[in-house]
Length: 175
Image (cartoon, helix red, strand yellow):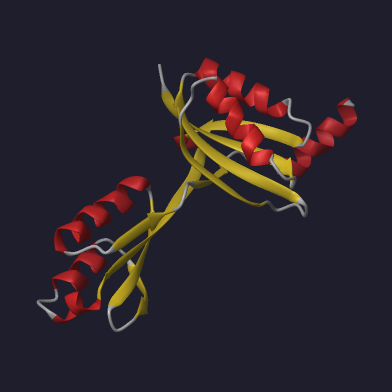
């Protein structure tokens, strides 16, 4: 049965790494639902967070293939309930919407969104949360007048307390 898995990949920061990792998914005909890349807690080590809907057998094979890449230090997979995750979205709406009946301000408060900047012609609003939360605000603003929308991929941290540093120490003792 397919489930949503969060794959965390820790790599050296090298050119073409994202391309090589995404090729693994392409070869296995697996759609990436979300991907984000960022520095990790260790200097010189980057982290990719990849969200996929696959079976456990498929995710195990994917992680195994990813770990075969020379620059990959370690890869893990976790179910949604084993991680804390968030996404972020920006919405551009006309500033004139605020001067009408107060409905826009009510929508933003209901969705715990915050105004980042107010310009003469438009206002930028930010929402952080799960994809359902972001979509709900999108739907509400779309009914009024949404000019632009962009959202990030998921960022996630696993709940298990074994750190990457400990995993790397274990690898040193094995080799």
